Image 1 (tube, rainbow, N blue to C red):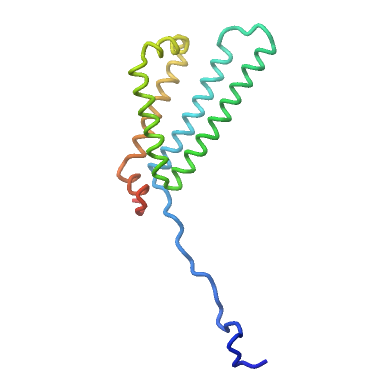
Image 2 (cartoon, rainbow, N blue to C red):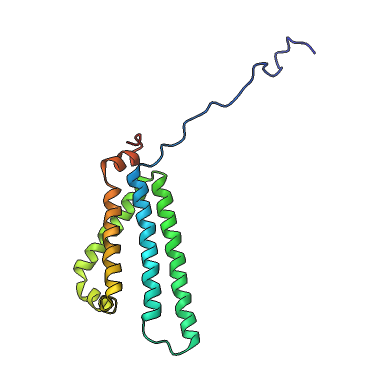
Length: 163
């Protein structure tokens, strides 16, 4: 064939230019996401304790229905935490603010609706194990939100290089 063909493919090897990937999430964001998973595990433990130590279920069908709803709640909780952590590790600032807003609203709702929460939490607070789990979950939740708002995390969510 003719080497002077203008439509011939190039003779030099052609390769793609290696582009750097997105910056990896800093330690504070990873730790916050891990705390969210720990919180889900504690909530699962709390649900199992409530299932087995709750009021006596007289029929087998009612026991299966109760266990079914606990498993459905666990599945939904798993999907929500997975979605949140994936978005946070991808650097989505809107997710950081969304979960911060929901947490602040939930904390404020306890303050404004304390009479309602007293009634709802009375059976939970009667069991010391559930009380400890509730307090540990609250502290872990606060720590996870605080870690998402450190300077290191803010730089990551703004698109800066991880510190």
